[in-house]
Length: 270
Ligand SMILES: Cc1cc2nc3c(=O)[nH]c(=O)nc-3n(C[C@H](O)[C@H](O)[C@H](O)COP(=O)(O)O)c2cc1C
Image 1 (cartoon, rainbow, N blue to C red):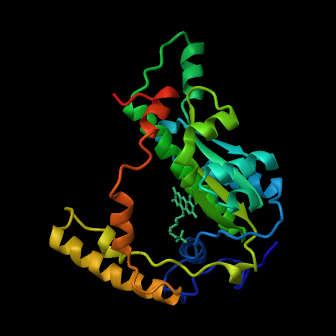
Image 2 (cartoon, rainbow, N blue to C red; image 1 turned 135 degrees about the vertical axis):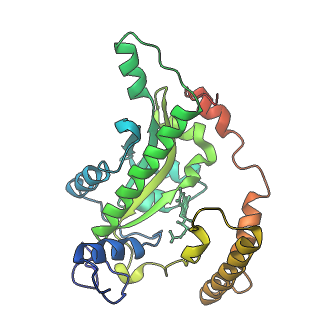
């Protein structure tokens, strides 16, 4: 397994902060060291590593303890190749050491209701509960893998043809994909990972008491555009910034088939 460059733990390279515990330094270092990895060595991820990560990830908080998610590890190479196609030709889906589909799971709750002779009332909230629970679990899972020196990449592209994914995996009623997750040993080791993508200044996403005025929001966008332009320049794509990517993404209705698909799986937006 690839070694981390520091003392065995991932680190963002920052100096120790007075009064900060070693655990906090390591955990915050691992979180801050994240970057999405899209090129992997052809080495599988061991089941023991996966089991450790899943077990830790399950400790994420879960709405009312409902644990409304399910993780499917896709192991069949032919299925993975097809999922790579369905995700818009993303080769890492087929090539990563392991590939998972994170699903919202309302079926388990429906079975509980059924077995107690009760009805199950799907609504917007039950759908959201599974999306929120699944996302919290997935991010814990990602962090667990990254702390083991593995690279990760979420695959929202899985929703490009969500009905195709559903059919391929023969998902039962009440279980629906949220996104995929590639995990594996980064090609070229830790040094082979891409540069970190900058985030907005913390004050842009954190305010006290009230949401900031539009002028303030616009100022933080301009500041982030400058940082992003520098990032793109370093990566050989001068002239690009953050807001250009944002408006281009949201100028069209994204994946308009999703509502009908999720409803077909038993979700209800009432
Ligand atoms: C839910 C979700 C879905 C994503 N889907 C994809 C994807 O389909 N393909 C991809 O290459 N990256 C995907 N990403 C990764 C984002 O592009 C990436 O997190 C973002 O650009 C920030 O870069 P960083 O993760 O390297 O910091 C996804 C991220 C999230 C959270």
